[in-house]
Length: 93
Image 1 (cartoon, rainbow, N blue to C red):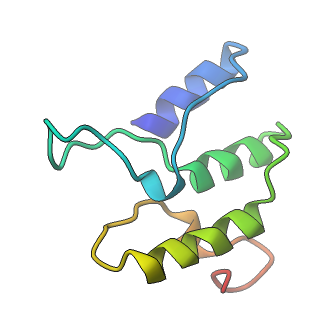
Image 2 (image 1 turned 90 degrees about the vertical axis):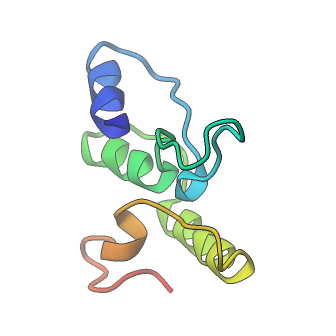
């Protein structure tokens, strides 16, 4: 639902949104709660609809790979890192 809400906000002119790399974060009082927008997916969404975020998506996905290596027991969310970027043919390494 986070990306759907972000899309609605962008349609209304909002240009400041909150997101987190890999969807990490949350509230210790609500374990397993979801809701953080995955930054990689949000940046891709913005890029797709012509909004320049100033974020280098390829580098962002590379940083995510570092998180995966350094925090192997922490689940990361999102589609971009798993699917890869269109035109690259494979997920960013």
